[in-house]
Length: 343
Ligand code: HEM
Image (cartoon, rainbow, N blue to C red; front, side):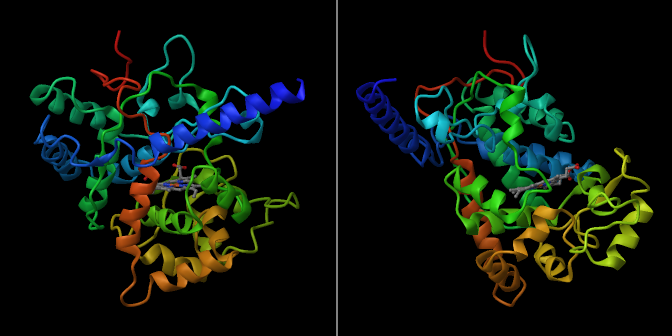
């Protein structure tokens, strides 16, 4: 590529990136987006979620995680900036699309443990009955995430709405999700690449105060951690906790057993996740890694003190996360059903 062409290409992409950034950061997203077009939208979502939580409270964790997995897919990286084909994808409801001609995000390994798609369909049908074609599936995910936090005794926060639904869902884009063995550098870069701060990282990790995990997400810490054999465990994990976890996860190949992520209060959204971390009882390496950076470590300690700002911070960081790659105005569409694009 000649240097003039390269420069033209670079500036074009820089301009486009600024545009995408403007569109995605709050532009078009606002609190009460449906106040005239579907004034009961949030009440309808809440009613459906309250009904679901009354009979299936264990769906709170997966439904919170689903919004995170919708938002945290493909990001621009350096090669994309220099005339690549990539762009920012994010909270556009693409996690909900079924595979048709090709495999969708849903089929990617990190998403195989997601549950609650039926709940989203139920919420969407209730909305379609009252306001057909108005409320996007991407917004349903964001509102549902807030409502399950509230249902588990966590904070209420205002959700920005006005997202539109994407028409694309590719398995490969979900491989950008952060893995449970990520170290602090990978975690910080992953959040930074999506316009989120180190504070957002430590605050949103607090989502692990509710829900369960499959043994396979952390059993490398219990067995053969560094390739030295069966009894080789992760030295950053409390040995007593290891003993307890091993009674639940019987081998490295256990892919079915579920373990509470925040033992003792995994059904309640509270600060106990942060109390476990300094005791070396964070379940994932990515949880333990929050002790490896001065800013995240300071927050972990602060989060359990009287007057902790965690509840307020969580709402702020969820709003920040909900802005990643959001489609607004005339982009995308409002799907009629969440699992298929409109025809
Ligand atoms: C910081 C990087 C993160 C990593 C590496 C990570 C990783 C994971 C993994 C591996 C699981 C267990 C999946 C399974 O085996 O079933 C999980 C569960 C969960 N995650 Fe995260 N997560 C991260 C951030 C977040 C964020 C930002 C949220 C939401 C704000 C979140 C909410 C949850 C919830 C609620 C569960 C429990 C799901 C259930 O009950 O089925 N996570 N996470």
